[in-house]
Length: 535
Image 1 (cartoon, rainbow, N blue to C red):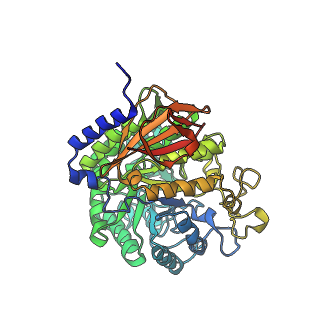
Image 2: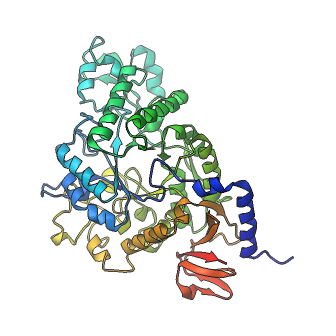
Image 3: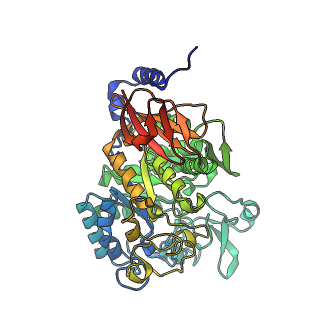
């Protein structure tokens, strides 16, 4: 029997799609009423982005000054890492939930930023840290004074003797290397201990206390209604309650979302649930989106190993499966998530502020970085670009070194470059700053611009269904995108060698060089991507 051509395979898949989905579902799938369904998001660490006043620290006026750059990149939304007052550089330990850290600016300056962003059709979401406060928060300062203090029940306390075994048995988790959950108040080791999942400087709030929940809802309403933000990124969403109270976690987030929707019906809430799909699935009801950690690692591992693999996370770390494609996993997970929340959309990314930067993971190989970007930007979901990823910023843990200053201009001309840290990885000697990359059509920045433009011009890439096309050649990652009766074929060569693929009835080349195509099919160069439409 002759081998099936790609065209016949496409026809058979189209029939399956036709019979499995009615027209209304096909035309509306993945359209999220709570978010621009085809949007691009950009994560910013304010401290490292742009310094407007010369004090060495990035600030809110600096971000406002760079909104036109984000518009040039075709960004639809920004996610800001914490901006509330905090004693730490990263600000994940809040001391005032309704303020702006003075190092970053004022509330009036932030409101102006929101207004300016909205005038450019850029939405603003902020990090909202509710799992814990700072140990310097006025609530905790009061709570630790004794059992009768006003805010004692805002936190979780236990008798030292009753938690002795728990203190000894705590294991690290993938999002925390802390091995001590319970902490003594400084200078009083014999008294009750308080619960702090991440460390003693971040005491966990007690969400069994309805007063605490109402405090948090009131704070959320303030930022949505009075300040005007469009939504929240919820840090440590998996840890509102301990893992053995997972159902309480799920119920809380459903309630939180309902409370926020009372103020802003289209509020966008994206959660950090650093776990596998099985653990994530019940959280979906309470969120507009969850970050897809498995997918991020699968993309980078596939590019690094030069063959398609699927990664998943468990308590032992990352597990690699070379027998299946992560595309099939996207499909199966999406079916599960859509059953729980039909408006759910994946938040997809390559790296973020908690992970080694993508460029460093990829061995500082610009062509591999382009390939990884092309894969992400041709998948369904909302792509999140970590600031500087588009210019190839590098970085490996500890955390400060994956949050280094953005390079706008060559050092001597870069008046807005922040100086709060001396960079180790992202310097003028390791990569070209943005202004130079803008002049180079072959730069990583230019490639990001190009791929984002392709995604905008082809709504099928953001809104459409996806299905795997299985080939004998494991160096090629090939999948189909379907939307409103149209189909695109997306092809990525993961290999350092040119690869061949039979391709019949070519109608239009969406991405790729015409010299790659002939009557015999496609000869795609190393680490390149192509998108085609067939007759």
